[in-house]
Length: 292
Image (cartoon, rainbow, N blue to C red; front, side):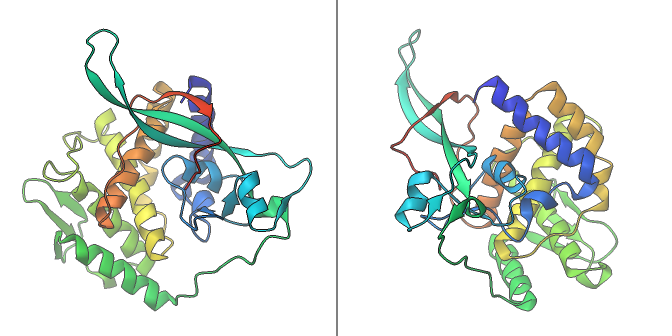
């Protein structure tokens, strides 16, 4: 990903944070994650806030060709949105001649359902709130994380490899409970025996702020996978300035955050984590790959 693109994405996320405060995720959550018209799968990583914060009412997207394949037509003059896909490649290092595994960034132009004519009907999530919350409970239970309920503290305790949580009835809403539990489960996913993220940071330093942002983002992705829109966490408001400062210092942080948050969410959902695009090559267009 080139620097100009990283700068553009970072500015967009910072604007969301400054405008919406602790509710900064709301614009890109909507009523679900952005999905591809051809595969029906949700977009991933940094593509989630890119597509979710465009302001369109629909969460369905596709390339010009993909819309044509379902009998729809992109209207003349509509502006595409750029998204990205990382393709794993094996190359030989020019200096050491050792084989390296890298991720090549590819860019794509996609259009929202609101930008096309004759699109097929949009499928809606018909689950009831009870069914959605039951799905969230199933997801968390399936992780096997050790969780103790009671008291007034929500935290992941690395030394005990345990999550402590207030009881569900102590929260104002079920969504609030889900959001906090998903946040702490995201921290749990970073333990050395799991995804091995740096959990050693202290409040106020960069490592702590980065891990909090990863956990907050993963919590949103986990909740939305269950069909639950998490309530904004009051605690996140006090971290916002640190997050914004860190992103202004390093414009590539937000790409890392969404990559690690996606990996955490995949782990929680029982899926294989996606490798982090730590050193992607410059983005180029490629008509042979389809975004998912």
